[in-house]
Image (cartoon, rainbow over all chains, first blue to last red; front, side, top):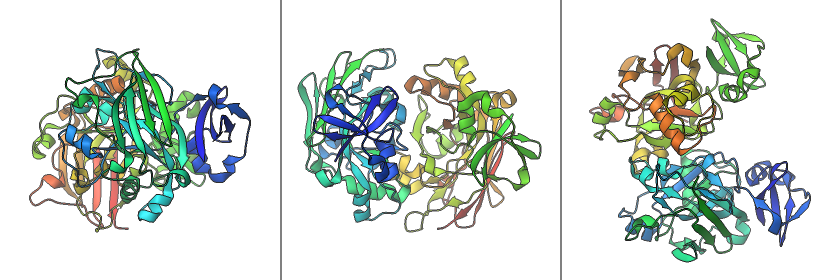
Length: 272
Length: 272
């Protein structure tokens, strides 16, 4: 099953993807749909997917957890060591944008070191605390695409990444939640980022140091995971900061973030 | 004005503190009250403060931002450098407990290195983006007490603090929001942590490297701050990890976190 979140005249609505159509459902977004369970799945009106204005797949996640340094080639290019456990940091809701929304670049006086990070994102489907691997797998609602667009100088101005990772309106999320009956544990998927048609990142989710089940199980030791929680699993090599000379996203650049079977986010960068 | 959040038979409610009484208000917590503005301030029933079961002051903050390494004596004891900008990390809602709730220690097989961190917390009162210093001050709704109880081995297992900072049910928040007409910008307040009656931390909020206004202004460059957002401003010296030998919170320990003019959280540590 493929689910999405659409902007309508009366606010956002979750929808089921049926070929070229979207069937509107009784929940404000995919997160609320997962929290409500099956009752919210009753069919509403149908709209053409081509006409739809997609919102962030989950508009109000209770948590957005990001995993850093989780692909071996990215660990090497950033000069870091393979960590003994997943490296977690957070992002706040205001960072999220829809899969075709513009990326809101900060004013040049704030930062110009804006970088891409294509990531496989987990969306939690059911509550989990202290789960084993099988329970962790069962708690995963599905997968989607996220780009952890990063403000590198803010990320690096202290030891903690958060400041550079949660800038407003810079993190595309979507277009679809694809459930685990279609894509299993999220491994074996081609992942890429393109800027203005040029491939910058190209890898496979099987290269993750800690995979989706590892991450969900470990996080559930720390805190209860709830339906609609979003977990970004890290980015492969090829980011702009690691290039010589470094490359940054600039006004007008088109960032395409794609994962096989899951679809693509295509976002244009815009100065204020 | 002093505001608090009380558990009632029908869920949590915001309340205004009037001497020994609490006047219940039309909002589920202080965060919702701040978001609703003055209309929610109409008086409801009165209950005796002595009988009240206090919830986390803000039960559903949109964001919890923590500032690390922000008192000079704590920076020295942890062997860090004074950072050039505030060091931000996050905490999730499930970490919060009320001002007299038990602190949920993790099972000893998960961690035993549980540490205290008394902190002044800001609660945002009105929306702010790209604010100057005066606007940042005006956006502060008031101040309260937080203890950023930390699981040190999880905090240190990677470069990023989040894992050790957001364990479920370990972060006391409350008892009251004290508005800025009473405590100004939150400077000049005595702050302390006591464990089983022994003073472990004792400092003053004037020792902050980045004060409340600095932090709110800087954060608003990154993201929109919303009413009810909670910002913990960092802890002074005297944490358990910096003692020789290190000292940790154990089953039955009573942690008292106090800030002059704001009140105290008194929480007992409990194993599962």
